[in-house]
Image (cartoon, rainbow, N blue to C red; front, side, top):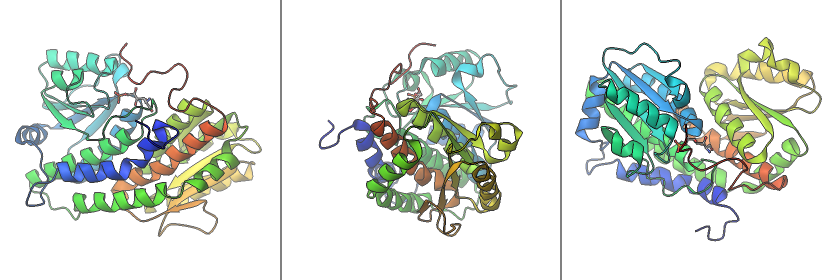
Length: 357
Ligand code: M6R
C-alpha cells in the first residue's frame, strides 16, 4: 500500500533507513556479532575468486560490492552483466563462487547463468529480496535482503539493501579469515541509516534541483571516479528509466576521451565526489565541462566540500558512501520524472522483473 505517498518509488526511497536497521537486526546475533549461515561462510572461505552475476541496478550494486569485498575480505571479485556472461565467459579460477544478486530472484538472464554454472559443478549463492524465488530455490545458498516488497519498477531500496548485505558478508568472511579490520559494519550501517533519514527529510531541495537541472533537457551526464563512478552509473540508470532523459554515467577521467564533445551550453553534468583520493581530479573535470557551458552540480561529502557545492552529504565511512550518495540521485530522478509528467512507478516499456532472456 502506498499510504499517504503519491508513488511507491518515493515511499520505497523513504523506507531505506528502516531497511538498513532491519538488516542490522536480522544479521546480528545476541553477542552483537554478524549472523551468517555457517555454510555460506564456508563457501566464501573456500572461494579463490568470486563472480558476481546481475542485471541493471543489481549489477550496479555488485560493482560497489566488489570494492567492499576486495577491500575487507581480500578475495578477488569479478562483476558480470548476466546477459553477457555466456558470450564473454571469463576464464574461471580453480575454486569459483558465483553470487547472483537479484531483487526479484526471477531475472531470466541471471537464471541462465545459474543453470550453466551449476552444470559445470560450481557453487552458487543468491542474494535476493524474495527468498522463495527461482534464483533462490536453484542456488546452493541464499541471503535475504529484508527490504520488504519493492513495487516501483525503478529499484531503490533493493540497491542499498544489496550493498549493506554484501558489506556484512564481506566482514563476516574477513573475520573468518582472521583479518583485522578497523571497521564495525553494524555501527557504520547504523550511521548510514541516520544519514539517509536526514537526506530524505529534506525533499523540497531535490525537487528544486531537479527543476533547475532537468526541466526541458534532452540529455544529462553524471560523472564520478573510483567508488563514485559506480554510483553515477546507477544515478543515470534511475534518471533515464523514469524520466526518459538520455542520461549516462561516466568515469571522470574518460570525459576527455570523447564524451566531452557532447557538452553544450546548459548540458546538465552532475558530479559525485565522496572519496578523498579523487576529490581533486573530479573537480578538475567539473571545471572542464563548466568551461564548455555545462550546468554543473556537485554532490560532495563533509570534509571534502567546497563552497560552491550543490549538496554536501554528512560523513559516513568511505566504503559505504554509495549508500548515501545514491539517495539524492534517486530523489533527483523521481522529481525529474514528476516534473515531466511521467508515470513514475510504471515507466513505459519496462517490467518489474525481466523474465525473458
Ligand atoms: O530483480 P533484479 O534485481 O534481478 O532486476 C534486475 C534489473 O532488471 C533491475 O534492477 C532494473 O534494472 C531496475 N528496473 C532498475 O531500476
